[in-house]
Image: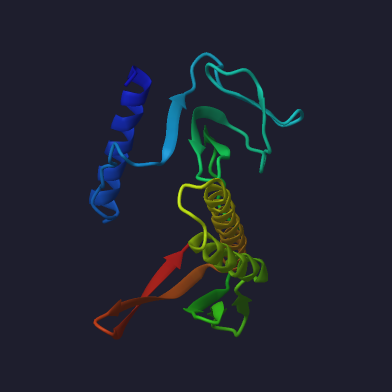
Length: 216
C-alpha cells in the first residue's frame, strides 16, 4: 500500500468514527480483502487531476487525458478523485471538490411525507410521486435474464454473457433510481421549509412508526 492509499484509508476511518459518535450512524465496518469492489482514491497534487468540460476529458495521475461522459459541471478546488469499476465493467470517476456552500431560499411552506408501496410517496397536500416506469421496465427485463441464466451451463461463454447483461441491468436500475430520487428530493427541499416524514420499521411481523423532522 503506497502512502496516498494509506492516508486515504486513515481519513476514511476517521470520518466513519466521527459519524458514529456525532451523528449516531452505524458502527464502522471494515472491508474484507476479498471484497470484489474495485476502487482507489488519489489526492490532488501539483495539478495531477484536471477536468475539461469543453472537450469532455479527465486527467488522472499516471494516466493521460481520457474521454469521459461528464454528468454535471462543478466549480471549486479539486481535493481528490476516486476511480471505481462496477460489475458491468464500466469505470466511474468521482471528483471531490471544495466549494462555497449556498444556502437555499427560505419559504413559508411545510409538508409531510407518507411513503407507500404503490406510489413512492404522497405529500400532506395530496401530491403523489409515482415509481418511475423506466425502473419497472428494467425490473421485468432483469427477471427474464435471471431465468435465462438459470438455464445456462455454469462457467460457459453464454453464462458469462448473460451475467454481464444482468450486471448492466442492475446498473441501469440503480442509476435511474438515484437520478429520480435526487430530482424529487431537490424539488421537495426547495419548495418547503419544514419536512416531516414517516419512518417505518418492521419488527416481528408488526409495524413501528416514528416521525422525523427535517428543517432547512
